[in-house]
Image 1 (cartoon, each protein chain N blue to C red):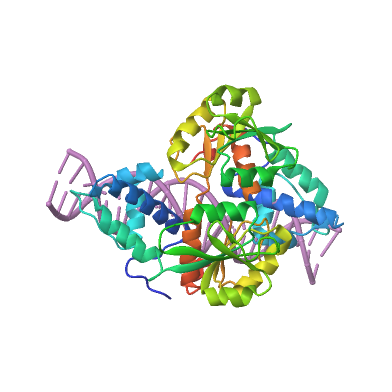
Image 2: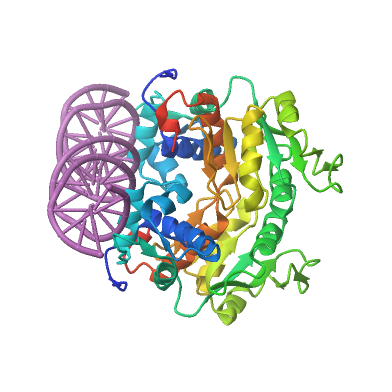
Length: 220
Length: 220
DNA sequence: TGTTGTGAAAACCTTCACAGCG
DNA sequence: CGCTGTGAAGGTTTTCACAACA
C-alpha cells in the first residue's frame, strides 16, 4: 500500500474536501491572511471545524493552537498530497455542448492538470482547434492518448458510446475517468471512475426541494 | 415529518440510486422485459444486489422470490416516490457555456421536470430564446421566478455572483439549488443545495488515477 | 480565554447470511 | 433450487469532548 508522505489514508470524501480547502486557502492567501483557524476554513467550506482538523491530520499537517494553520504551507502540503509530481495530461472525448463547456472551463487552468487533446466523431470538428484545444478523430484514439501521455480522461459522449470510449481510453493508458454519460462503465477495478449524472443530480435536488426541510436529513 | 407512502426514510444516497434504477428500468422495460432480479439491476447500476433490495425496501416495494420485481410497477413506484404529484418548474441562471449545455441537455426531457425560464446578465442574450428556452434579464429575477412557480434552480454563473443569485432564487420561492459555481452557498437550512464542482471532481479523478488501485479504497 | 490534535463515541451506510417461500 | 426481505454484523465517516498548550 502506497504510504503517502505522512498520516493516514485519504478516502474519496477526504480528497474532495482537501481540494475545496485548497481553493479557499488560495483565496484567503490572496486576501492577505497568513494564518487561518479550522472553524474559519470550515465555515467557508460548509463543514465542521472538527472535520477540517481530521482532514488535515490525515495528510499529516499541523497548526499551532495560537495561530491556527499557516496558509501558504498548507496550500503547499495539500498540493504535495493531491498533485502529481509534475503535471497530468487529460484528454476529453466528445466535443458537444458539454465537452465545449468543459474546454472553456479548463482553458488556462492551474499548471497541474491540462487538457492536451480532444476527440470527436464528427468530421466537421476533427482537426480543428476548439476552445484552444486540438480535436482529433476518434479512430486512432488509443494511440493518440498514449502519445499524449494521458492518465486521465473525460467522457462527454452520448450514453451508448460511453462504454466503448472508456475501453479505448483505458487501452491508451488512462487510469481515471470523469464520466458525464448516464451509463455505468464496466472497467477493471484499477480504473477509477467518477460519474457525474446531471439528470440524477437534478432529480435529487427536486426531491429534497419538495420535501422542504421537513426532515432534517434533507439538510447538509 | 413527512411520511412518504410507506417504508423508511430515503437519504441522499438512496435517492440518487433510485433515480439511477429508474432510468435503467425504463431501458429494461423498453427492451421487452417484464421482470427483473435484484442482481440484474444491481449489475447494471454498479452496486450490490443487497443494496438494491434495501433501497426498494426503503420505498416499500416488494418483489416475488420467483419472478423478481415487476418492471413497470417498480418504475411507477419510484416515480410516486421521487416525483412531484404533477411536475416541477426549474429555472436556470447563467446562460454561458455550462448553462447552454444544460439547456441542450434538458430540452424535451421527461414530463416531471422542465426548465421554464433562464436568466442572464448579458443584454445580448436577454429576451431571446436560447436552446428552446426564453432568457430573462436578471433584474426582476425574484418576481419572475415566483411567476414561473419554480421550486428548483440551477446556478451556472461565475463564482462571485453565485451567492447573490442564490438569495434571489430563494426569495423567489426556490427550495432546491443545483450549484455549478465553485462557491459554498450560505443559505437557510431549508434550502437544499447540491454542489457540482468540476474542478474538484477532476482533481479527485487525477489523484486516484495516479494512485492506480494500489490501495483498494480508490475503488468503488 | 482561545486554539489544536485526537481517542472514543455516535451516526450512518453497506454487506452478510439466512429464514421463508414459490 | 434461487430468489426476496431483513435482523444483525461490519465498516466507514462524522462528531464529541477534552488534554495540552499559548
